[in-house]
Length: 114
Length: 115
Image (cartoon, rainbow over all chains, first blue to last red; front, side):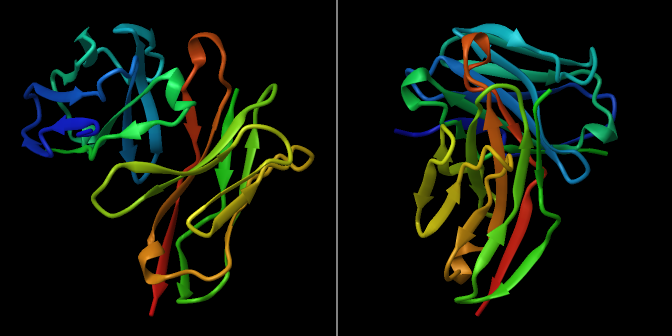
Protein backbone atom coordinates (compact mmCIF):
# COMPACT_ATOMS: atom_id res chain seq x y z
CA UNK A 1 0.00 0.00 0.00
CA UNK A 2 1.38 3.40 -0.98
CA UNK A 3 -0.06 5.17 2.02
CA UNK A 4 -1.58 8.65 1.99
CA UNK A 5 0.00 10.68 -0.79
CA UNK A 6 0.24 14.45 -0.62
CA UNK A 7 1.52 16.91 -3.18
CA UNK A 8 3.42 19.06 -3.49
CA UNK A 9 5.91 18.28 -0.72
CA UNK A 10 7.02 21.90 -0.59
CA UNK A 11 5.30 25.03 -1.86
CA UNK A 12 6.70 28.54 -1.85
CA UNK A 13 4.43 31.30 -3.07
CA UNK A 14 3.89 35.00 -2.78
CA UNK A 15 1.21 36.68 -0.76
CA UNK A 16 -2.03 36.97 -2.69
CA UNK A 17 -1.48 33.92 -4.85
CA UNK A 18 -3.76 30.92 -4.94
CA UNK A 19 -2.41 27.72 -3.41
CA UNK A 20 -3.82 24.23 -3.97
CA UNK A 21 -2.75 21.27 -1.87
CA UNK A 22 -3.63 17.74 -2.94
CA UNK A 23 -4.23 14.48 -1.17
CA UNK A 24 -4.86 10.90 -2.20
CA UNK A 25 -6.13 8.81 0.72
CA UNK A 26 -5.53 5.11 1.20
CA UNK A 27 -7.85 3.07 -0.96
CA UNK A 28 -10.89 1.89 0.99
CA UNK A 29 -10.67 4.57 3.65
CA UNK A 30 -13.87 6.62 3.90
CA UNK A 31 -12.68 9.33 6.31
CA UNK A 32 -10.33 12.09 5.23
CA UNK A 33 -8.88 14.79 7.47
CA UNK A 34 -6.94 17.99 6.79
CA UNK A 35 -4.69 19.20 9.63
CA UNK A 36 -2.43 22.24 9.91
CA UNK A 37 0.72 22.23 12.05
CA UNK A 38 2.45 25.37 13.31
CA UNK A 39 4.83 26.04 16.15
CA UNK A 40 2.41 28.47 17.76
CA UNK A 41 -0.83 26.49 17.53
CA UNK A 42 0.35 22.89 17.22
CA UNK A 43 -1.79 20.47 15.24
CA UNK A 44 -5.22 21.84 14.29
CA UNK A 45 -8.01 20.00 12.52
CA UNK A 46 -9.25 22.12 9.64
CA UNK A 47 -11.94 19.94 8.10
CA UNK A 48 -12.88 16.31 7.67
CA UNK A 49 -14.94 14.29 5.24
CA UNK A 50 -16.87 11.05 5.46
CA UNK A 51 -17.78 9.34 2.20
CA UNK A 52 -16.69 12.48 0.34
CA UNK A 53 -19.10 14.70 2.31
CA UNK A 54 -17.73 17.46 4.56
CA UNK A 55 -18.78 16.67 8.12
CA UNK A 56 -17.07 19.34 10.20
CA UNK A 57 -15.38 22.43 8.78
CA UNK A 58 -15.40 24.44 12.00
CA UNK A 59 -11.60 24.52 12.02
CA UNK A 60 -11.29 26.25 8.68
CA UNK A 61 -9.74 29.62 9.56
CA UNK A 62 -11.75 31.85 7.22
CA UNK A 63 -13.36 32.10 3.85
CA UNK A 64 -9.99 32.13 2.13
CA UNK A 65 -9.77 28.40 2.83
CA UNK A 66 -11.85 25.84 0.99
CA UNK A 67 -11.68 22.05 0.69
CA UNK A 68 -13.26 19.61 -1.70
CA UNK A 69 -13.45 15.88 -2.12
CA UNK A 70 -14.87 15.18 -5.58
CA UNK A 71 -14.36 11.43 -5.25
CA UNK A 72 -13.12 8.80 -2.83
CA UNK A 73 -9.54 8.98 -4.04
CA UNK A 74 -8.83 12.70 -4.15
CA UNK A 75 -9.15 15.83 -2.05
CA UNK A 76 -7.90 19.39 -2.35
CA UNK A 77 -7.34 22.20 0.11
CA UNK A 78 -7.26 25.62 -1.50
CA UNK A 79 -6.16 28.95 -0.08
CA UNK A 80 -7.12 32.04 -2.05
CA UNK A 81 -5.64 34.56 -1.54
CA UNK A 82 -2.74 33.26 0.51
CA UNK A 83 -1.17 35.27 3.35
CA UNK A 84 2.15 34.90 5.22
CA UNK A 85 0.30 33.68 8.33
CA UNK A 86 -0.86 30.66 6.34
CA UNK A 87 2.72 29.36 6.33
CA UNK A 88 2.61 25.94 8.00
CA UNK A 89 2.80 22.23 7.35
CA UNK A 90 -0.50 20.87 6.08
CA UNK A 91 -1.21 17.19 6.68
CA UNK A 92 -3.82 14.97 5.15
CA UNK A 93 -4.88 11.81 6.96
CA UNK A 94 -7.31 9.02 6.22
CA UNK A 95 -9.00 6.24 8.14
CA UNK A 96 -11.97 3.93 8.21
CA UNK A 97 -13.96 2.12 10.87
CA UNK A 98 -11.89 -0.93 10.03
CA UNK A 99 -8.74 0.90 11.15
CA UNK A 100 -10.33 1.31 14.57
CA UNK A 101 -9.74 5.07 14.88
CA UNK A 102 -6.12 4.83 13.71
CA UNK A 103 -5.28 7.73 11.41
CA UNK A 104 -2.81 7.29 8.57
CA UNK A 105 -0.99 10.53 7.82
CA UNK A 106 0.68 11.71 4.66
CA UNK A 107 4.14 13.28 4.74
CA UNK A 108 2.67 16.77 4.63
CA UNK A 109 3.04 19.88 2.47
CA UNK A 110 5.39 22.55 3.78
CA UNK A 111 3.81 25.85 2.68
CA UNK A 112 5.74 29.12 2.78
CA UNK A 113 3.92 32.31 1.84
CA UNK A 114 6.31 35.21 1.32
CA UNK B 1 -15.16 20.55 24.76
CA UNK B 2 -12.30 18.12 24.45
CA UNK B 3 -8.73 19.13 25.25
CA UNK B 4 -5.34 17.48 25.75
CA UNK B 5 -2.46 18.94 27.73
CA UNK B 6 1.09 17.62 27.44
CA UNK B 7 4.14 18.41 29.50
CA UNK B 8 6.25 21.27 28.25
CA UNK B 9 9.24 20.32 26.16
CA UNK B 10 11.72 19.89 24.82
CA UNK B 11 12.96 16.83 26.68
CA UNK B 12 16.63 15.90 26.37
CA UNK B 13 17.90 12.54 27.65
CA UNK B 14 20.96 10.36 27.40
CA UNK B 15 20.67 6.95 25.77
CA UNK B 16 19.26 4.26 28.10
CA UNK B 17 17.60 6.83 30.37
CA UNK B 18 14.01 6.44 31.57
CA UNK B 19 11.39 8.49 29.75
CA UNK B 20 8.12 9.92 30.99
CA UNK B 21 5.98 12.35 29.01
CA UNK B 22 2.92 13.51 30.91
CA UNK B 23 -0.48 13.83 29.28
CA UNK B 24 -3.80 14.82 30.83
CA UNK B 25 -7.12 15.27 29.13
CA UNK B 26 -10.56 16.80 29.45
CA UNK B 27 -13.45 15.09 27.74
CA UNK B 28 -17.02 14.04 28.20
CA UNK B 29 -17.91 10.39 28.29
CA UNK B 30 -15.33 7.69 27.65
CA UNK B 31 -12.79 8.76 25.04
CA UNK B 32 -10.17 6.62 23.37
CA UNK B 33 -6.60 7.78 24.03
CA UNK B 34 -3.62 7.69 21.69
CA UNK B 35 0.07 8.47 21.42
CA UNK B 36 1.34 9.42 17.98
CA UNK B 37 4.99 9.95 17.03
CA UNK B 38 6.39 12.22 14.33
CA UNK B 39 9.91 11.62 13.04
CA UNK B 40 11.70 14.49 11.28
CA UNK B 41 10.21 15.27 7.89
CA UNK B 42 7.43 12.71 8.20
CA UNK B 43 3.76 12.55 9.07
CA UNK B 44 2.45 11.28 12.37
CA UNK B 45 2.31 7.56 13.08
CA UNK B 46 0.24 5.79 15.70
CA UNK B 47 2.48 4.55 18.52
CA UNK B 48 -0.10 3.06 20.88
CA UNK B 49 -3.68 3.41 22.03
CA UNK B 50 -6.08 2.51 24.84
CA UNK B 51 -9.84 2.48 24.59
CA UNK B 52 -11.07 2.10 28.16
CA UNK B 53 -10.08 2.78 31.74
CA UNK B 54 -7.10 0.81 33.08
CA UNK B 55 -6.17 -0.40 29.61
CA UNK B 56 -2.45 -0.35 28.88
CA UNK B 57 -1.26 0.38 25.38
CA UNK B 58 2.24 -0.74 24.43
CA UNK B 59 4.48 -0.77 21.38
CA UNK B 60 8.24 -0.68 20.70
CA UNK B 61 9.01 -0.59 24.44
CA UNK B 62 6.69 2.36 25.05
CA UNK B 63 3.74 2.02 27.43
CA UNK B 64 0.84 4.19 28.59
CA UNK B 65 -2.02 3.36 30.96
CA UNK B 66 -5.48 4.92 30.69
CA UNK B 67 -6.18 6.42 34.12
CA UNK B 68 -9.72 7.70 34.31
CA UNK B 69 -9.48 8.76 37.96
CA UNK B 70 -6.64 11.16 37.15
CA UNK B 71 -7.65 11.75 33.50
CA UNK B 72 -4.12 10.91 32.43
CA UNK B 73 -2.31 8.85 29.80
CA UNK B 74 1.39 9.28 30.52
CA UNK B 75 3.90 7.81 28.08
CA UNK B 76 6.85 5.82 29.49
CA UNK B 77 9.85 3.92 28.20
CA UNK B 78 12.40 2.22 30.37
CA UNK B 79 15.45 2.75 28.19
CA UNK B 80 15.41 5.25 25.34
CA UNK B 81 17.53 5.05 22.20
CA UNK B 82 18.86 7.73 19.88
CA UNK B 83 16.34 6.51 17.30
CA UNK B 84 13.49 7.52 19.64
CA UNK B 85 14.26 11.19 19.01
CA UNK B 86 11.03 12.60 17.62
CA UNK B 87 7.95 14.64 18.51
CA UNK B 88 5.33 12.82 20.58
CA UNK B 89 1.65 13.76 20.52
CA UNK B 90 -1.03 12.70 22.96
CA UNK B 91 -4.54 12.63 21.49
CA UNK B 92 -8.10 11.64 22.27
CA UNK B 93 -11.16 10.65 20.33
CA UNK B 94 -14.77 10.70 21.37
CA UNK B 95 -15.92 8.19 18.81
CA UNK B 96 -19.47 7.81 17.81
CA UNK B 97 -21.75 9.00 15.10
CA UNK B 98 -20.28 11.51 12.76
CA UNK B 99 -17.41 12.31 15.14
CA UNK B 100 -15.75 8.97 14.46
CA UNK B 101 -12.03 9.31 13.91
CA UNK B 102 -11.92 12.99 14.84
CA UNK B 103 -8.89 13.40 17.11
CA UNK B 104 -7.97 16.23 19.46
CA UNK B 105 -4.17 16.50 19.79
CA UNK B 106 -1.95 17.90 22.48
CA UNK B 107 0.71 20.42 21.55
CA UNK B 108 3.45 17.83 21.14
CA UNK B 109 6.65 17.16 23.10
CA UNK B 110 10.03 17.19 21.39
CA UNK B 111 12.31 14.39 22.60
CA UNK B 112 16.04 14.41 21.85
CA UNK B 113 18.17 11.45 22.91
CA UNK B 114 21.96 11.82 22.95
CA UNK B 115 24.42 8.91 22.66
